[in-house]
Image 1 (cartoon, rainbow over the protein chains, first blue to last red):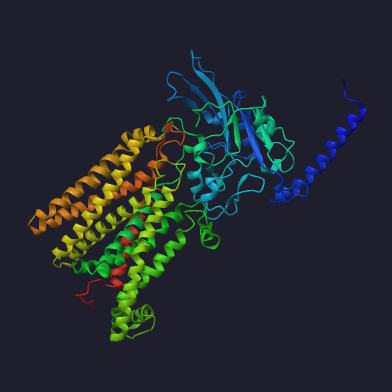
Image 2: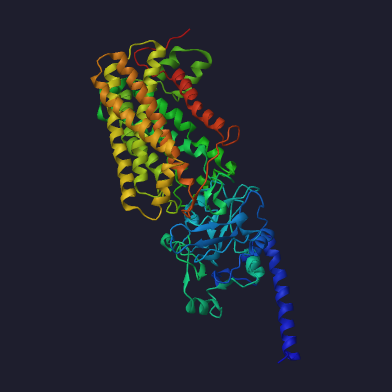
Length: 253
Length: 387
């Protein structure tokens, strides 16, 4: 059934209101205080991400979008998000072949299919751990967990000692060569506080990524987590990541 | 990135901590070790090592002054380092460094050295003229009271400071070990043994350094080496070394036997990329050989040969402990936290964190020590000669 006029007006009206709200919020983002935006209450959200390994095709668009959106340096090769291609031979599961050429930025060259080898892509990013070792070790508290569950870095305050980079079990951090401070995925904090998606979620052609709000009872993430077998990376580290993987092979580290 | 074998997370290819961070535990270890040797004489009244007491204190001070420099040079924003004092993050193992450092430097080392030298400083103040007189007067803090009573108080306070100083020295270097040992993400570092191993290796390196400095200074001053003193120091070095070696072997055995998820990766690394620095330099040349030399030294009757043995053992010890720091700091970054690959550390020369700076930072404390020895001569029986 085509949408009726009433429905159309309602949707358009919502869109206009949201755009206006987003532009107000943008002023606060530019001022470096997105949490003070009048239409965004940081205490009312608890962000998480779902990555569906079975849906990722390794096209690299998330890596490209992330670099473009966040100004991540092209060279040397640092990444806020990257994609790994895993090939696991069931006869030799201890020695998987893993690669991430240029972080998967340009996608992956096809490899001759090997009989009986399991191949899949694993997009990675900061896990936004609830008990984050990087936050724990920062000597001045420049890296911190925001009230809405995002691990952020105060670049005006970071010493550049790199202790947090050593403490991250996932290789999510690097030293930004331009600011000489630690850097990593912010879950596009400047976007999500405006009601937008992260850049990587926005561009993913297969919807392999989903940004969810665990404090919003209406968010589909609750149903997803209830009905899928999800896994986090390196659970033995007890960092309590908020990046959940669906269909993740147990050998992925 | 041809230096990478297997798979590294893309952000891991560059090493985060360079040779400067190798120097940091090496230098603080020398400080702690030298101080602990000095304290032996003071607290436990070991008369035999008395000739090295002041030299050990000055050595500790010279290296302590240099200790924060490699850290400072390494920071992305050195100008912000003071924030660690103003807004320390209480859950960070690193945040306490500044406080422990200052406590140790100002409350222990400087006070102990000042009390030890106070009588001489007053003496030099009253005997010299001009600028020198003024300098010694400042050093004496303007007080010329060297009466029996005052000196007795000096001695008692000095003893108290030493007693506080020993746990402080333990704290200083145990703490440095904790900075590495508490990183659960890195299996090469993450072990509760780390602070203990760091502590004993610190004692080993500090004692070896003071022993060498003593031989070098006696040779330079053309005075007779006090062999009982040297023998005693060498014996302490041997004991500390045996404990240190035993601790490191316990750690190694534990890792081999437990063989957790990281074991194969680390084992492969030790047999390939770390083979020369770990097996050859640290364990064989830097530990087994000097322990052997120190063990057979008492059987050598000829003084000169024995002294030569001590010198060789001391130099090898310092090389071995430096290799140990290298293997901890650099080795901990050569493998991927995915346990699927390895990278290489490319040591540059003329960069901010290059070999040139590292060598300069190792020479600097010796220059400082020369200056300190000039201002505060540590030889009690050879009063300062004046032109």
